[in-house]
Image 1 (tube, rainbow, N blue to C red):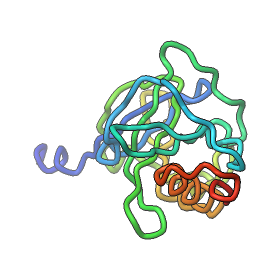
Image 2 (tube, helix red, strand yellow):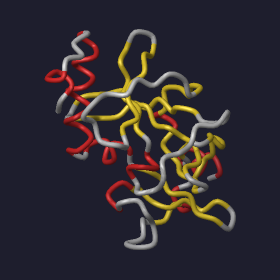
Image 3 (cartoon, rainbow, N blue to C red):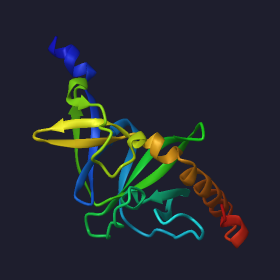
Amino acid sequence: MANHEMANQQQYLTFFLADEQYAVGVLRVKEIIEYGVVTRVPTTPPYIRGVINLRGSVVPVVDLSVKFGMLECPVSRRTCIIILETMLGGERATMGVVADSVSQVIQFAPQDIEPAPAFGTRVRMEYVEGLAKMGSKFVLILNMDAVFAADEVAVPLGGASTALASGDTSEGATAA
């Protein structure tokens, strides 16, 4: 019985944005890197910090704090970029997410996860898979496919990434 319960547990990476704790499925996380040079791309929404060069690949970097209606997270020595794999327009895509800091990898059993409430959070409900109990607190488990699938993210990023990957940085190439 104990082995069966352990098999049903899922691992999540927890991280902080504006003093609030969030989680993403650890299987989506490719790596965590130090916040470095991020190249701004004209005509992208304010929550898109820009792009980074990750071993020759152009990776868009999203500031979830801004996307969720909070203030832009200031860069500190603990600020990092979580590199995630997500589905974007039916295809696998690599995206970066700015985090104030990364906390831990934790396992949650299905009974530790509650459905997302219809109120009380700054995050749109379609972005939330559920709330996980962590002691006396809750952690918002994010559905990153839903966060990145929103048309306002997918269209500008696709155009910017394609233009930068091809070396075309003219105004028409970077416009969404």
